[in-house]
Amino acid sequence: MHGAVLQVSVSRGGLPKRAVPESEIGPLGLAGDDHAHPQFHGGPRQAVLLISSEAIAELVRLGFPLYPGALGENITTKGVDHKQWRAGQRWRVGQAVIEFTKPRTPCHQLDVYGVGIQEAVHDARVKTGDTSSPKWAMSGFYASVVQPGIVRPGDPILLLDQIV
Image (cartoon, rainbow, N blue to C red; front, side, top):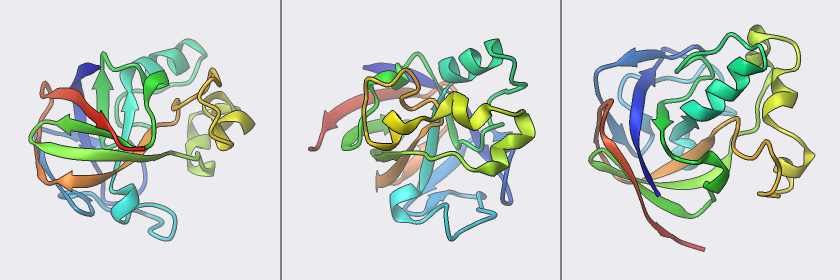
């Protein structure tokens, strides 16, 4: 599997995150990115949040006013099938290598985009790890950082291997 980085995004905490021309991905996430609720977000196992542009497009078709960065993701991908994302996969993203750790569980902060958005991106099957759910990885996937590096829009994303 391979695709590309559509957008790199950071914020001072909360969402939406804003586009930046590049950022260094380090052990605790992207340079210049903070978390409004560090007790729930961030840390080495949730250093980076990725969401596919295809998932965003699907949510827009459902009527949610979304765009890259709106859901609080650091990396918006293009051309990578989020339904194939799994914990343990290692990906090269620009110069960095990341390892997917877990699907993101949405919180009430997303409600600013409309009633029902949490249900549109997550269900009981996703919560139990059922990858056959039609909502699998719609809310994004967290990753830890294996190898720090710079990431920019247009950089390739390449599945390296699966550790499980």
